[in-house]
Image 1 (spheres, rainbow, N blue to C red):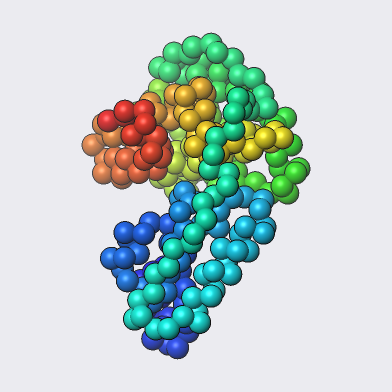
Image 2: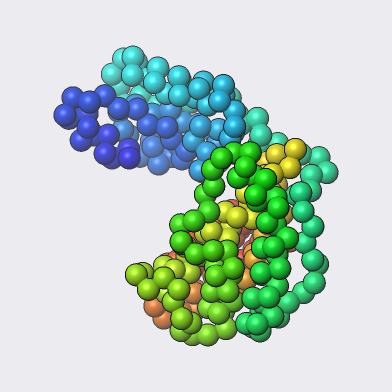
Length: 247
């Protein structure tokens, strides 16, 4: 989007960008940018805080009145108030602590389906309260998603549940839906934890995370370049790769 700003400006349309990665914006040098100290995926800051988000947008749009730079890069001076961990937080559901053999497709699929069922009431509560969901990119129900994850770990060429795309693209979408489902369920309680807190709980405590990490390892070992790229960039967030010491 920063590069696109040049073309829009050439056509006489003023632009302003909200930047989450300051060094990248400095290198691109687009006409006007507001850098915000928020995590990736949250350019306006905390969810469900309309007043705070309005302040971010107001600051960004205010740059349209700034003197030409030719590059204007301003910093938003407030942190995300939800970036602080909530003391003694736990998600609004209980999960089994049982271990599962990730190489046993049937056992893994059953364990993942049980995990999905355990989260279902909290997920439904989240959707009812927020009237939205980020689950659905795969077009599969959650049971089909987790069964495909289990099958992909167990077989070199499992049956693709989304024939319109490649098996590895179908896997990426299924993983995205599983992660979105779990993180939405965690947000259903009265206390909304920091995103860092939710992510750590998911990657440390769920069977779904164990399966996704194992899938990442499998894709990285593949001879297919697209599979390698998906494993490297799309399954496990970079911050969790570093935190968990994954290779």
